[in-house]
Each structure stands twice: as C-alpha cells, then as structure tokens.
Amino acid sequence: MTNTKSKHDPFAVLKVKEFLFFLNTRFFLTLAIQMQSVIVGWQVYKITGDVLDLGLIGLAEAIPFIAVSLFSGHVADVVSRKKSSSLLLPF
Image 1 (cartoon, helix red, strand yellow):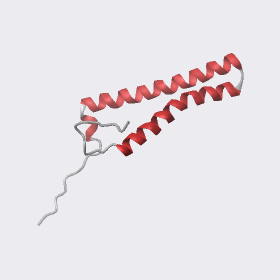
Image 2 (spheres, one colour):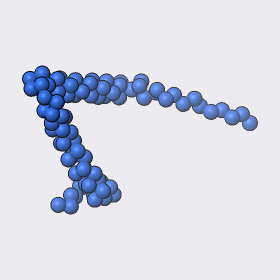
Image 3 (cartoon, helix red, strand yellow):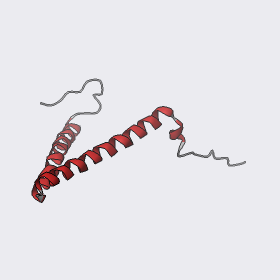
Image 4 (cartoon, one colour):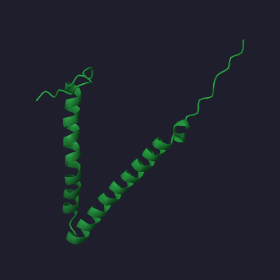
C-alpha cells in the first residue's frame, strides 16, 4: 500500500483573481490611511510647534476606534450567533 499525500499549496488562494484584487485594495487602503495620519500630525506640528497638540491629534484619531471597538465587542457578546437570519439588538 502506498501512502500518497497530495501537496498542499499555501499560496493557491493568490491565484483567485477576486481575492488578489481584494488583498491589493486592502493593502493600498491601509497605506493611504497611515500616510494621512502622518501627514495630519506633521502639518499640526508644523503649524503649532507644540508636542501636546500633536498628541491630542493622535488621541482624536484613536478615540472613535476605541469607542466603536468597545461597542461592537459588547454587541458580539450579547447577540446570539444562532439567530443569523435577523439581528436583534438588545437596546
């Protein structure tokens, strides 16, 4: 009896045209967001020259992310995944 194992290609997903398009789009979107964050901080520091203002800009960029993460985590904990047909929020 021979033991024949099929080779698993970990990069097979990169041959799917739609996924490759999604991956490239996601990469360039992340790059653009990071560039925008650096440029806004740079411009604020150039205009004000104050490090505190630069820190407040970073905080203003982080607060919405933190708030949405906490809210979505709460919703993920409360809502049953078994009810996939309709999403019933508890509020």
